[in-house]
Image (cartoon, rainbow, N blue to C red; front, side):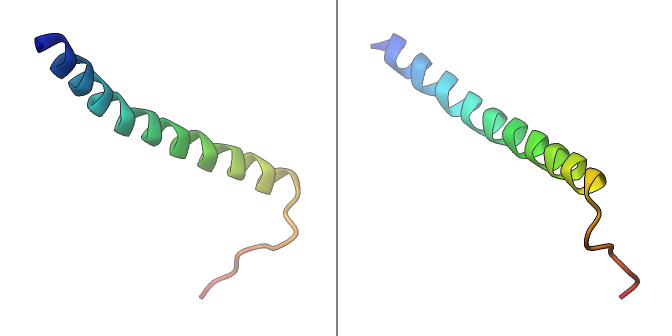
Length: 45
């Protein structure tokens, strides 16, 4: 009985961590792609 709660707790703890890592690497990859092909430069607003 306690094993099921532990597995759920581990899963609940790892899910946001995995989502955060995917977001961070996605932004990093987008920055690399943008630096390789700067078609749309960002100007002052």
